[in-house]
Image 1: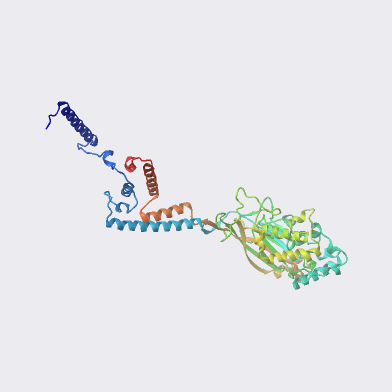
Image 2: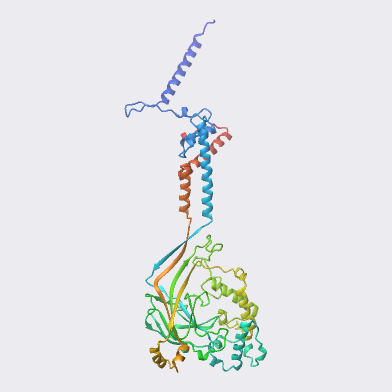
Length: 518
């Protein structure tokens, strides 16, 4: 062997020395002495934790060992070797995950179907708003005032008979021209019975009130009627219930002034409705006959339905009139209600067909809108309105929706003979009645009152709220995988690390174990 030069021996010795020093420093760096409790512990440094070639399966193994989801830590071990036990746990976790996804889709589907529940409660009130009470005589026209038109009584008689036989009246028989003239509301008012002759005595809240000033004349489909507590700035409220505490009316139907009309009854038609609504707008109807004292015991119900996106009426949404940006689409009725909308739609179509309106149409008060003559009413307007009410497709054409908030008045009616024999003579003298039979054929007593100071509230509420949805989702996650909302953050973290891993590989950089470094 050749002789080794001293300078080369020196270099080798120096290199071994540096290698040994590096090894010692690495060992010193890789251990840390903790002397606080008198014991020495060693901790592995990041250099020992990071695998030389960190792969995607390493990332998955780290997630399985650190996540809070039940079963994942049994799928794979730290040495990344799959076992039969791991395969069984994989199947169990996949099955539980599929079941969870199925349940979550069902929960979300239920939430976005916006199911509705209904709650019915009875509430005791210290005060209750009294409804409007509209009283319509079964014959609103006064025969004594029609005598200046000799042919009118014959017309009303024949037209009433034709109404029942569906035939059209022959107007050629009338030659005085009254049938072809467009009459004003003033004319119709003068031909009708007035409040001063109909109302004898009126009481409200146990105190006598002036009938004429408290009952406002209003035109309805029945003709000229009179309404108590209608569309006033100060709506009447009641604080007590019972037949003595609310409205009492002694009424003379004036049967001696009746003329022929399509209905053959004698008495009054009582309409109970919201004070701000027209009397024809879906009222509660009660009939009262002369010779009887009629008691109308009311019970108020309030309905509150859910607006869009909920289907308040099975397949239909309600109109949210309480929405701040809601604008009443109706021109002649306020406030917006389904009945006001439907009435305006029919009246508008009838006006477009006939060129005139009926006395109950709000447009009749406008000077440039003519009221139909009797001939036009008989041959066009009444027929058109009657046919439109029979048309089942008209509701879709009018596009009227029911409001989300409304109220109804349920009534229980009872009656007894009026007056008692002992009172007959006294009442005959007070009303200037000729005989007791005359009194019983013309006079009646009406009492309208709340049976209890109680209101029934029917209110819809969402079956699924956000809190309900999150509660159900959390329950399903806990049942299937023992997971929670924070588990979603873990999954999000895994997806983020997987994305960063792919970015490292695409850039040609060494992938990092971010589970332990971050």
